[in-house]
Amino acid sequence: METPHARAQAVPPPGGTRRKAAAAATREWLVVSSSGGACLEDVGKHQVMARTGLPARDLRVLDPNLSYPSSILGRERAIVVNLERFRAVITAHEVLIPNSKDPVVAPFVRELQARISDSGGANQTSDLDGEALTKETSTSPGIAVPGARQRDALEASEQNNSIPARENSSLPAPPPLALLKVQSMKKVLPFEFRALEVCLESACRCLEAETLTLEKEAYPALDELTSKISTLNLERVRQIKSRLVAISGRVQKVRDELEHLLDDDMDMAEMYLTEKLMNQRIFESSLSRIHENDHNHDGKDHHDIDNDDDDDDDDDDVTEGNRGEDIQSDPGSSNGGITAIKPNIEELEMLLEAYFVQIDGTLNKLSHLREYVDDTEDYINIMLDDKQNQLLQMGVMLSTATVVITTGVVVVGLFGMNIGISLYNPPTTPEEAQMSHMKFWGTTFGTIGGCVILYILAIGWGKKSGLLQ
Image: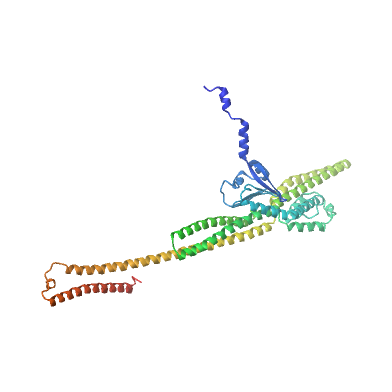
């Protein structure tokens, strides 16, 4: 019987189990910030989900141990990129790469850091301008907001605002500096698009390199096969065709994914992470300004009540009703403003179209190579059919020769029968001996000549009738 002390010793310590579970749950991610700096972080799956707002199924797409087709997923706070061996989670201010130690991914990481560092200064300036412009907008409602969708959001909030028109008319006009800032911001791609561009460029470059390598191996092998059909050449072509089918499927998948994004404007709008973040900040500042104005109106209403009780009771009812309508309409207008904000997708559309054309060109190269392989196969089949026809003709000729020779054998067999004729009588005089020899050779050569004549006649009839060439 097992004692309690023995059972206590059999139970493993809980601390070691927790450490092993934590080590299994965490993974090393390379985090590239918006300034171009990179650092390795051991982050768990739930931490990444809380950091990027992604569901668990999107993180499974990035698992290096699993095989998923190429895909680009736009989510509320992040973009999930899975193109060939290049996997990344792109947010508005950083890029998370799960398989940074892969030798194939190392050039991609360097290119990403270099691209972000080159544009870091311009991006930082535009971010500072955007924040300053947001502050100016929060203090001066008349200043224009960068972006048509952002202006729509402010116009919707201004309609719900209860500031009198005569107060709004006294606000200063937008300064020219703000307009210059808006124009400078439009020239710089957002951070997420620059990171997405590096991912697309690396994937297209990798597929293009594999395609060129395959072309360099395929065309000489196919030409050699046409000149000499052998088992070794056929095996080489078979391996090349297998690689061609695999690469074509991968390129086709990337092309289909880009085509799907270009056809769906809502999916492209989901990828504007920086603009959505800016819209959220502008909306929050507008909402705080609306509440501040409502608070000021409440103070004026209380002051009017102290001066005149009878008249202001009715005015307070109207004011309270209007303010209640404003408060009720604010959530609806805010939700409608957020859902109605659709960023201008022209920048992303031009970016995706450029790489769509590039990947389509790669697919065309593979299509031409596939056609060349098919043409080579057709040519080989034609050559094999011609050889087979030649073998069949040779068989017909040999069969004809066999039939003719069989005819000569029949004649020889007839002469070899034990029949008493004068030809078989032994010669008694020299003249008879000489005559018997002449008859023997005459019969022999006559039989051979007859067989040859019959063979020539049979072959001539076959060519005339089209059976032989």
